[in-house]
Length: 132
Image 1: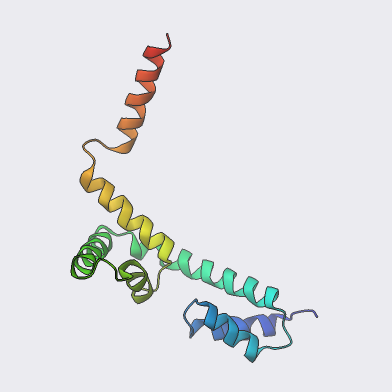
Image 2 (image 1 turned 90 degrees about the vertical axis):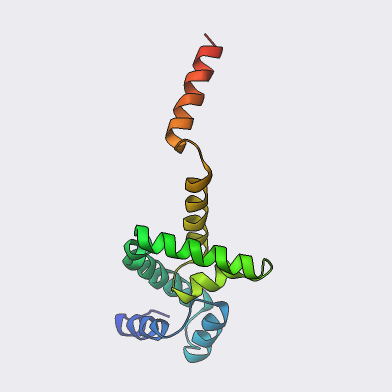
């Protein structure tokens, strides 16, 4: 079945009001039974990628990063078994994997004595000296 632009737009509009979860995908399938699971998943993925690209900059300001990091530390401090990262990502409407990356990079920034590139160049120079 060929998908028209109007049908695509209707599906995309539906996605605006639902969180990006498997349950949302099931609801889409119920609402648009004539569309294949693969078609709906493709539209779902495309629209989610567009959303992430549109909101990327706001999640990477120094203020946002520090806020996420402090909230993560506070949440883990209260209950280390809680899905703090997932809850934080859902709360700010950002991909959990990208939120994890923000938190990890902030952690490494705090715990590294030298920036990563400097370490990389130091190791490369050390290897070159060893193999001369």
